Length: 137
Image 1 (spheres, rainbow, N blue to C red):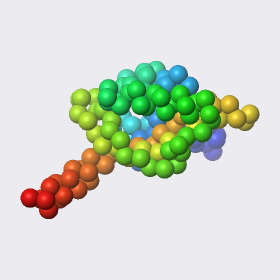
Image 2 (image 1 turned 90 degrees about the vertical axis):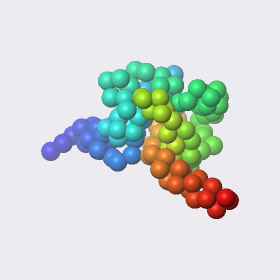
Image 3 (image 1 turned 45 degrees about the vertical axis):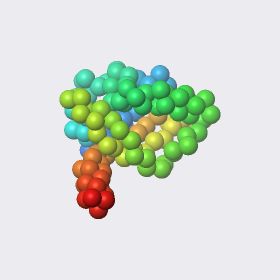
């Protein structure tokens, strides 16, 4: 029989989508196998790093503004709503990813950090753009 925390860890590691948890400072403290596959960074390379590891430079100011606002208010505008954004792969390649976000709070409601689930939608976006370009030519 697996204890609940072992089961939780196995679920997090085995889900198909990338799961990333960062604490209030934006330090990555959970990074599952799908995160490693999507972004190219092993858990050893990502854990303890800042989220800027996977955020393109031109999006960082907006990301941190939203992150700080969510921590301060205890709510997120995008909570539970998939959003299309860009992310960085270890190789430097930019990805299109669809992400959902949630704040993680303790029993008293204090925000501990943020969790994000992400999936690569680069191929789909590039196909849609190519189809649109072909229509317009």
